[in-house]
Length: 293
Ligand SMILES: Nc1nc(=O)c2c([nH]1)NC[C@@H]1CN(c3ccc(C(=O)N[C@@H](CCC(=O)O)C(=O)O)cc3)C=[N+]21
Ligand SMILES: [Mg+2]
Image (cartoon, protein in one colour):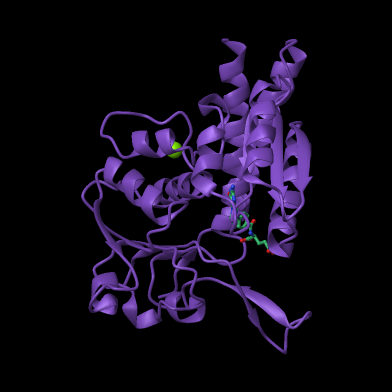
């Protein structure tokens, strides 16, 4: 048996087309064109690529993007000042501060300065806090976790009572995706670098979300036959046989896992494209919120 390949790129394309259609309708109806501000501090090449991908996706959906590139040595004060200006800018519905920030900057204070109504990444401590409280809905759900959940809902009849294992406990993926799975009535185990007998824990998973950032760490024999595997990892590794000497791999050893899992997301073409699609969806939602104000 080989797994169903979950085509995140195709699902993302559907979401993006839907966002584009709603944007076109609202502009046609005389409402504002949604706008996203991207803030990039420093010159991390991977971050530059991601920000460009987000801007291109905005353009295709009819969302205006405003790119801010600040030097590596930007002060906390100046970065927060830019965020406050963007909070007050009516053209800007969503603010995305690309992470990670250079070491000297306090990430949490920057994220906390973003207006709750413009927090399209869902990383503001209040939004995360609401995610952690039963019955309280955050204004915005973080994009990668939201993308994982959409792929799961499309590939499972129900999450009710299933054993979900989340590998990784980061603020931007592991923790929020675990909270969303709990909300969906899954039985959730969060495991990490200190977990004892990790392969045994992972083998209990009907649903596995791998988000540790360790290339091909999860082996085929860690996977329960028939499990749904969501691989969040985007790791660039050396591969002399590849075009530019590197290639992208996930946190799961795909060739092994595909022989055991019931369904699996590939890397690239799985969760990554969903992250961008959900960002566009959140930016449209932010524009709709601003209509009411
Ligand atoms: N404030 C903030 N928000 C983020 O959402 C955010 C961030 N910071 N920092 C970095 C991570 C990473 N991230 C990805 C987005 C798209 C792909 C993606 O589309 N990947 C393609 C491959 C891209 C390639 O070829 O490199 C794929 O998996 O098919 C991956 C990763 C967003 N992040
Ligand atoms: Mg949130």
